[in-house]
Length: 427
Image 1 (cartoon, rainbow, N blue to C red):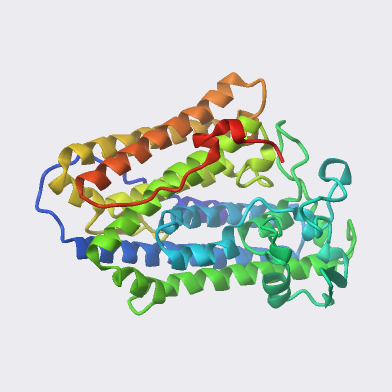
Image 2 (image 1 turned 180 degrees about the vertical axis):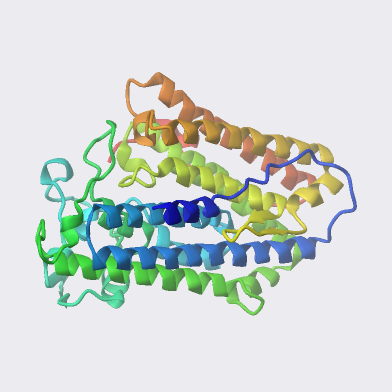
């Protein structure tokens, strides 16, 4: 386990806190945009590398499915999440990323599509999803609408082309981090009480199989992990000098590129993270609305989203190999062109990260997991999460201030949870 702990420690980034803005020579906008693409290539590259490590860990678990190898695979999954979450600031402004993102990070998911579930907590049907309890692990023949599908062998094509988003239901998530998370942890049946998913290692044993179909469950986990590696390598390559994502970004020109950067930061800060991922679950006190719900890793997902936004803003990213990539940034451009707006945004990033750190420290200490913090009748935990939301909203306003000061235009994604909370209802 010592080698694993050293590996995990190496993945933890040194957060480049936004320092005070200082007037200086402004970097050329095209240099800022070019470095942003370099950051994307590096961050997605690290996500692919850590997914490769997850693939190795999963193979070791399947070779010897016991509590120790399962714990190692789970730890490696958590480590792999850190660089990927730092990539999410590249969403929203880049259509190339948004068109692809669902393959690796769609949530929430109706896990009964994939494997067995507890009917007492999950239910046995859903009015909105005909495939709610399809259980492809448990069935070699499945029916999707009017089509009968041969699922004798669980393949990349089966899960990515037949199951992912089947019948245009977003909750039919069959690929990516969260499908793998469910396969490693199983359902979290604790509600807003303590505890994460607790799938037994014997669910993957060929000699002492629990819950049946262990050979097929092994297939699914192996294939889903392989596919995650493929998808992340694809996106890392797309940001290389001749990659399609970089080409599409540069085709927008310097002004369009700067707007793309700030659109991603503003929309992730506001509608996606503050709204759909945090405030919604807090309003409903619903653990089904937490991002990494099977593993109780949600606090880290939110934290590394913020770390990644800071990296994009400052142009400084600590790679998983310990090296640091730095270059022309929005922060430097704003400090030279609009120092007051830049200082406000520096302060907002620092304030948000501080609130995120309180949340993360509370969860990491074992005192209270994220799903407990958003639970009912927990004013102290609720306030910690609401403080994160408030800081993210303020951060968004500061981003909009920089946008205005640089004479750019962007559209920030909204969220009913923030803009019209009275319309929010439980599913």
